[in-house]
Length: 428
Ligand SMILES: Cc1cc2nc3c(=O)[nH]c(=O)nc-3n(C[C@H](O)[C@H](O)[C@H](O)COP(=O)(O)OP(=O)(O)OC[C@H]3O[C@@H](n4cnc5c(N)ncnc54)[C@H](O)[C@@H]3O)c2cc1C
Ligand code: SF4
Ligand code: SF4
Ligand code: SF4
Image 1 (cartoon, rainbow, N blue to C red):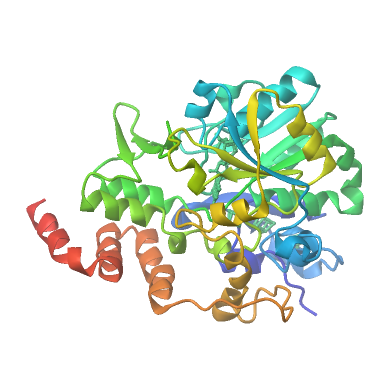
Image 2: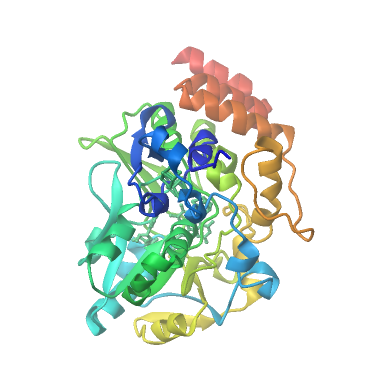
């Protein structure tokens, strides 16, 4: 019988480049490649012939977070209505105004770094910039090595290598899918010895992430050649900066200067133009972590312009870590805060919507990706507009037809602005 392998993930553009499968293949037959035509990293089989002879029971697919994960198991049954294990929920922010201002949300991750680096012999794995657009997991020694949120696909495969090759105690920071893949790997018998090296896992909340094409299209539509892009600089309604190293442009995503900027912003961060894998993701709040952290998009913080975090402690270890963070101001939170915070328009409903999105697999890839199909799970059906975005707008961007892609996007979203936009095109 022909066994399926991670090729079905890449064939469906569902690889989120966590790298777990690389360490699962006993024949070293997988490598991570940057696929220029897809504008993303992807796990790639080196020699297909080797796979035809591979009949190991748990092959590369078994650790893939884009494949057949039982999220009810991951969330520890249906606890808290599929919000996963929760010990406590907090909101809060760093007491240091500079840290708070320079972080994406309230500075929780950076305060965590300080409290652990100072007090214990814990090494921290965070992504860090290696070249203009490239970030990779690294053992960070200085807070300056840690970026704010990076909203595009990165190659996370180094994280596991670091744990494997260094006999230390690690705190690992990553997106839910990256933390899940790590968990799936250390659940494997041959890697179970690594469990003791993992001091704690910290997951960011994650509504969706993007291929790099969105950033390139954004820069093109803003008449700028992109070398670097950073997100969420300074204050609650943080800014995006694109730079070509000699020059830079700053964009206020929440309060764009004009319609054109608004359209560009909306396109760059449209959840239906996200990585394909994210359309099927159901873990937006880090079920496998000790601590999950995101933004506190809450009414009670409306008048606060510095930014705040919402934090879930999921294990006793997570709770102990949080208790030792003396420089972070904590307020008591509740499940209703989590739901309020993650269901607003800036973050795809981390709660519920992900669960519904299981239907998307059936819709697009009926014979490929199977995820558990328990009856209690609701199915989500794309609207025609969403399908056009996913299938056509994104395709046009990937083909670098940025202007046509934008026209189609405008037709879908802002019919009333279309004439204005065409006039602008003609004048330019
Ligand atoms: C792709 C993405 C989607 C997100 N979606 C949501 C959401 O829907 N709702 C919500 O409330 N919050 C979301 N967040 C989390 C939010 O943006 C903040 O990162 C979080 O609130 C922590 O803020 P902070 O101020 O404590 O730390 P920050 O200053 O944000 O520090 C973040 C740290 O996270 C790590 N990191 C950043 N980007 C990545 C990445 N791409 N891959 C792996 N590690 C990374 C690095 O270690 C970095 O230093 C998302 C983050 C990302 C990267
Ligand atoms: S099918 Fe087997 S040989 Fe092929 S990549 Fe997967 S684990 Fe490796
Ligand atoms: S998502 Fe991770 S495990 Fe799945 S194919 Fe991509 S790199 Fe491999
Ligand atoms: S939405 Fe899910 S799959 Fe996509 S980057 Fe976030 S955690 Fe990973």
